[in-house]
Length: 116
Image (cartoon, rainbow, N blue to C red):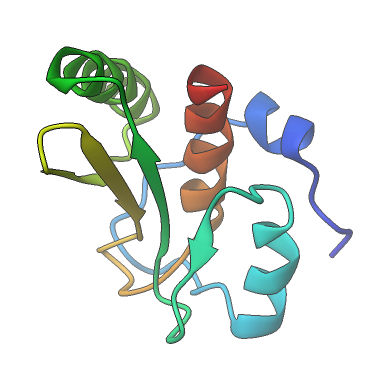
């Protein structure tokens, strides 16, 4: 597999996943995470996450709604956690396979585009 790029991921569409897709293994996940440098890779390599701090609660909600629109259009949904009224943590994993798939990095790259 060639090394993925951020722009290549943004051009892709998430594929429906009901299981049967191979989990991205540690070495491959470390290549993918380079395309989304604001995201962290979990030690168990089962999810990626990004934390953002907004100006206020309304801005957090705007970001949540923007992320929700992208997630719905891609058919791939993150876990969103609002804490302290202005902090947002975004967790991505492909629940159907119990780990990471390319969909997680596609969605992360698209989320980064709106958070830039």
